[in-house]
Length: 386
Image (tube, rainbow, N blue to C red; front, top):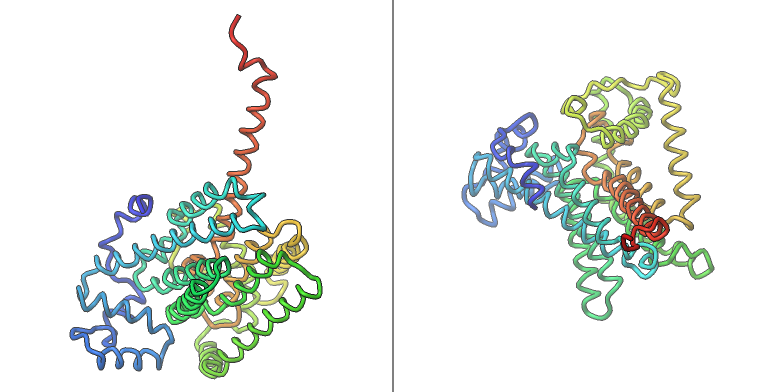
């Protein structure tokens, strides 16, 4: 919380910008002055016609109710959401590295890796857009509920009896809050299934393990079919209509995203202010060879995903967090007619690289300390001076 306050202390009076106007200052649905059930029902109905992000709009309505267009309140809520996300990430990693399947290897560094990863997550400049750009609380809220859902799932798996039911119920509730904050949380069941198979089933491919794997896949397919029945027509129409106003085709967007996804990684490595932007003019990939970096990017992504699958048994943590990065970008970096590049889309996917970087640094320091402690006696450091 202290690091977050230092990083964002100069942002609480940033005015409304761009989509803030359409979603807040020019949106009568969120401008609630009398808090009644009828007014909330009208907010939900009118919002749902255009977007399923009704919970995000509900929080904007709460901000308006308490402070109208005073930006401080909106920024304060964004700030608290970001802190909560960092805490849930810390909790998620601490639980993960102390699981029975990982504790022997990672337990001794679990606290350091969890803390270091969370501090990077809290303070990294790439998160500025999701925290400071008011309307992009949709991205940070989605990330917060996503991480909370996984935490509750892990707690449920480690519990028995009534607490397990409560934890799993909380998982579902948090998932629904996340989906109604922003649609990219829809991918969560896939990662819960991956987490289960990686860390609770230990990638067991025996007959029993295969049965569990098939059950997880079946549950995801059923959930996906249920979501498609409810919202499929809406998003098919949105996709078709969206490309009518775009200067690129669906194929061009998919090809371009292969380069964008790798470009995002360079922003994580080198987030210099001169490289961070709200409105990117990113060159379009016309074909798989125009520009040639399109094919190269596709091969790199395929190689990384392939490597993560190949090494899953030996290095499950490395494999899982590689898939975390690419998997949590897949909705916004696929066929939908969105803008090519937005930094707030990295809010949740960036967790993967942050965790792997933290592991590399912490374990590297631990090895260095061990070597130094081993060399000291040999060099006579611990012997008394003659």
